[in-house]
Image 1 (cartoon, rainbow, N blue to C red):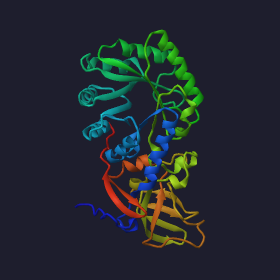
Image 2: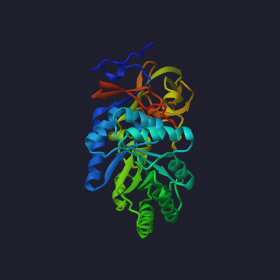
Image 3: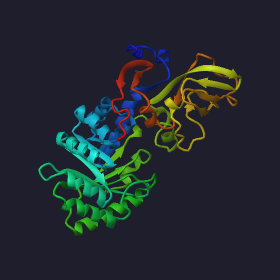
Image 4: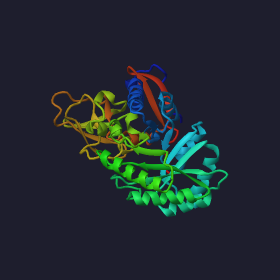
Length: 362
C-alpha cells in the first residue's frame, strides 16, 4: 500500500495525520540567519544533518554558504555521499573491523572525508586501516564540558594529535568539541592551550571545530574556533525556544495530529503517540506544546496515542476530528520517525521530501 502523499497546493489541514510539516519560509530564514551570522564573524559553517537527514535540505544549507556537512554515523554519511556531497565530517569514534572497512570504502569516494578520535585505541584502528596513498583526515575530539566523548585535557589532545601525525595513513586535521551550553570561555581556553602545545611540537592545527545549536549565536565568543557545527537550528523546536535560541516565529516544524477521542470533558486523545512525538522530554514535563491551545498538556504517550489534559484550557476545547499543530520538544528525533516530510508555504503543500538517512544509526 502506498502512502497517500498530498498533491502540491493541498491545504495542510487536509493531509493524512500524524505528519510533520515544514514551513518553507521559516526554514529558509533559519538557514539564512545562521549563515549570515557566522559569515559576519569569519567562521565557516558545517551544519549537522541529524536534524533533517535530507539531502534536499542539506543542499539548501550549502547553497547558502556552508562549507560541508556533519554526519554522526558511517551509514548516514553514505547516504549523503550517494547524493553527491563531497565534504563530510563524521563526529563519532569509528570502532570495529566492519565499520572500518565501510569507512575505508567511503574515504575512497568522498574527496574530503574527516572523522574524530579521542584515544590511542581509536587511532590505532584507523591507522591499521588506512595507507599513505589514500590517507584519512582525523580530528581529536575534546571534552570541554559536554561530558560525553573527548580527551579530558589539552595535554591529552596534543598526545593523540601526535599519534595521528605519526601514522602514515592518517592526516591530523585539527581539534573538535561539543561543549555544554554557556561554555564559550572554557572552550576558548582549551583551544588556546592545545594550540600552544601543538605549536611546540610543530604540528599544524588548521581546523578548530566548535558545535551546538543552543550557543550558535554566541560562536563569536570562541575566537580561536575556525568553524561551527549546528543542527537543530534549521527547524528549531520547543527546547530551542526555551534556551532563547529562537522565538516561536522561528519554528519551522510542526506535527499535525487529529483528535480521535474526547472520552471526558477534560481529556482528548490524538493520533500521535511515541512513534510520532518521541518520549524524549528534554527536561519538559509534557510531550510537546499544542499551538493555539493554551493550557493543553500532552501528559502521556503510548505507541499510537497521545493523551491531552484539557483541564486548564477554559471554554475553547477541540472536538473529535479537529486537527491540531504540535511543537515537538526535540525535532531531530521526530525526523527519524518518518520516511517523508511535507513542506508547505502559507499552509499549502509545496513538496514532499524523503527522509533519506532515516534509521542510519551505525
